Amino acid sequence: MRPEPKKPLIVVSYAHNDEPEHPADGEVKWLSFVIDFLEAAFRPRAVEIWRDRLMPGGTDWEPEIAQKFRACDIFILLVSRYSMKSEYVLDKEIPIIRGRQAKGEKVHFYPLVLTPTPKAGLATVRDKNLRPRNGKPLSDFSPNERLRQMSEAADEIAEIAATIVAGESIFSANAEEARARTKPFRIFISYSRIDDTPPPGNPAAGYVKHFRNQLMWELRQRGHADSIVWMDADKSELMDSWSNVAKEALLEADFFIVVLSKNYLQSEWCKKELEEIILLEKQLYGADGRRIFPVYKTPVPMEHVPDTLKNVNGLMLYNDMSEYYDRGRAKSEFFLVLSELTNAIDRRLRELG
Image (cartoon, rainbow, N blue to C red):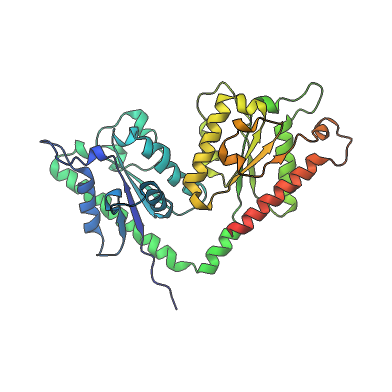
C-alpha cells in the first residue's frame, strides 16, 4: 500500500525585534505578515509551519528548536539587521541547515529580506537566491507592491513544498536506504600546524599528512574508496578566521579526528577550532553524537583536555612514532593504531545504519 504523502515541515527563523509586541507607528510585525501569506498559500493542514512562538510553556527550549531545524524541509530565514547580528541565528540555526545541505539532505534554504541590512550581514546568505529578487527589502516597496511581492514569495514556497511531496512519492523506503548506504562519508582532521612540520632531511609530507595518507589507504582497503579525509593544507596559526574552504569542509564532515598534542592544546586557534567541532557535533547530530575521534600524538595533561573528549577512548600514537622516521620498518604500533581507528569508524558507521 502506498504510504501517505509527506507533510512538509516549514521552519521560520526570525529576530524577535522584527515582531514587536506593541508596534510603533510605521512599524511592521514582520513575522505575522509572513505567516499570514504562508497560511493562505496552503490548504489547511497540508504543511506544518513552525516558529518558536508555537512552543508550549515548560518546553525544553533549545533541544526543541534544534530538533525542528534538523527535521525541517524548508528553512525560511527572515533577514534583517536584527537577525544578522543574532548569535543564535548565525552560530546555531544557520550552521544546522548548511550542515544538512552539505551532507546531501533535502532541505531548502529560503532567505526573505525584510528590511535594509548591511552588506556584511547579507554576505552570510548571499550564496542563496534572495527574495524579493536581487535582495531588495520588502520594506522598500510601496504597501500594495509589498503585498504582491510577499504573495509571489508565498506561492514560490508552496511550489517548493509541492515538489517535496512529489519527490517523496517517487522513491520507496528501500531506495532511500540504498542511497544512504552508498553515500561517501567525510572526515575532518583538526591538528596543529607545528605538528605537521616535516623533520629535516625526512619526507616532504609532515607527520599529520603522513597520518592522513595512511588512514585513507586503510579506509580504501575496507571498501570506502570514495570517502574523503580532509585537512587544511594551508593551515596557518596566524589566521583569525577559517577560510571558506575550511568552513565548508567542517560543515560537510560526518566525523572529526582531533590530533591532540602539547602544541595543539597550547594553540588558542586550535582550541577555538575544537570548541567549534564540539558545538557542531551537538547541533548537527544531537543525541546521535559520538562523531569525534581523538588521537594523541604526544602525551598531554588530561586536565587540559575538554570533558567531551575525556569521555571518549582516545588512541595513542606516541607509543611508537619511530615508523614515521624509519621507513625500513615493515610494521609498527603506528599502523596498529591506524587500523584500530579505521575499525572504530567502521563500527560507528554500522551503528548509524
